[in-house]
Length: 220
Length: 285
Image (cartoon, rainbow over all chains, first blue to last red; front, side, top):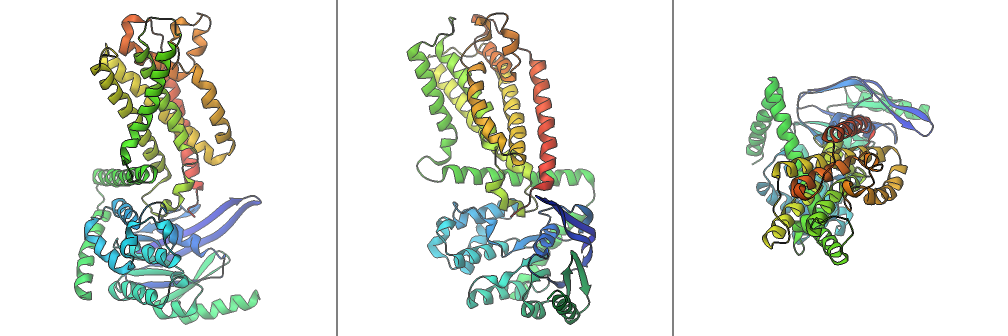
């Protein structure tokens, strides 16, 4: 279980303090897949970072009783002057996972061939996306945080991601953040809408979408 | 296939969860220590790989580079018979002096703006801002210490210098210099995250302090009136102590370990306070 109690987050900017998240209360149970809808800049990624533990809330508390992944499908996790393999080693070392047994999976999933031994800076964006996703699958977590996964890659890549996440890891909890309604509908048990800094949770995905459409039309 | 996979994963996660929910505090501490060790180790190796790569001698550059520097200084000073006004063998004088510089100058140098290139790593919950500083400081410590140690052995073996007279003093001097370099690095490094000016000032400051740092003179040859002022610089005390241990019988060393320790302690506390501040503020990209 992951529980957010009254979680708020504000940032200091050049023009005073801005509160991005206000009094959020969310509970995610084991095996549960929830979606978070929200417009660009609503604070979805901030919320994900807080849940992942990369940042701490300004006030409030986050309790994690299961292991939580870092935000998936974000390309920045690696050092571009290092090779794909070195980046794999780094991830494995940080999480205390044996390195050698994971190499075949990464080789197979990324289809990078010899490029796995070349610096990441020589990769195309598609290659980076494949490496990034493969590295995220190297460590087993109870809960995966997925931030706009559909933004990159071709159909084949999407299909492989789908198999890894929703078939092989169908029993895990997931928090999926997206503005892609199809993706949330297809994969989530319930969903919430991040509006004015607060997540409004709904028991059904449809309920969330109704509210989402309402808030959108209100703000034009 | 999928079912086997799931079963394996479930077992692995159960084990993880057992570890996580075990509340015994000594175990928690041990676990935190293990995670810390793992992260520092990963960061160290990563830093070595990014800086030196796998080409030619690879990670050996870590101490070959400072060794070349020190050797160059030793050679230069020997050629010009640098005037330090005593009978101290120039090789031992330059070795102790320049090695100390490596500590207090390179450690802060590596820690200024250390967070930005490592920003994305902060996405991994276990990686803290502190770990980035620790790994960089540790790497500089290893490089400078290996260089000092290896050059000492080589110089002693070829008869260029005499073995240290008092190893304990040499060790204490080195440790004090390491503490000073580390605490200064932490303070200057964390401060540089709050203000751009720190970097601008650090470079000229480190050059200006160089001639005053005790690397190129011993305190005893200075006018008596100037000595207390020079000894206000913490590293001067450290170099004097180091030299007292190396060849104390042919020089009169001036130092105050208590004073130096106080300075280091204050710097450490300031650094940790500033670290806590930026730890809250740094936003992973």
